Image (cartoon, rainbow, N blue to C red; front, side, top):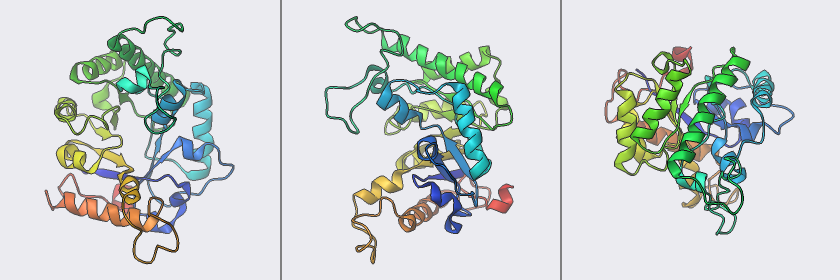
Length: 298
């Protein structure tokens, strides 16, 4: 099993940039949906739903599945078919569910999903497990609906949860809905990016990798890839941009920007360094770290 790393790209124009022709990219719906025109992709790419930001900021999905499918079709008409399309899943991190509105708007602010879950204002919230169950139910239901609405699209199921038992429950929910995750070309692992510094992420990934499933890790950090990347079929990450924000700009870039958080040269250098470090673990073409070329992947 070869491993595909999708470089997170918050600039859709990179899709049409020759420098990224052999670099699989992950681009969020949030970066594409408002555009009138689209760059034609020169290489492989993955369509991310942008669900984390949507739920974090608004506490719900503001579009229906029918609208979502229409958006995807319009985008694909312009960009080209992606390898995979993420569904409208519901993240299960505690702060996403319970919210955090006692801080200034920003990275630490979360809307919470009380309203979406039907909890009246002033009433005590339901248990975290009950709320997680609802998020999982909506995740599975949406995948089934989106696939039914658009069978021609490469939509992949996403598991949501907070620990091994809840992820198992989500897998059981897919099975009950008639979805054979073992037969899927890709199964996303949602809500894991904030767990990967703990033993939880290893346990969760191992649980489903042992079933032979083709797993995708969303937003996996470099340390996380070193720990569990060999068990994944693919992963995506924007960690290069966060790293660049903390560093001075590349030599010669000082006159262009204060840091390289949006810089294609930095992103490509970061990716090359990451794949080089991972290749040291198993430096052969049989390695899970081997990145196939566009021709090989076709």
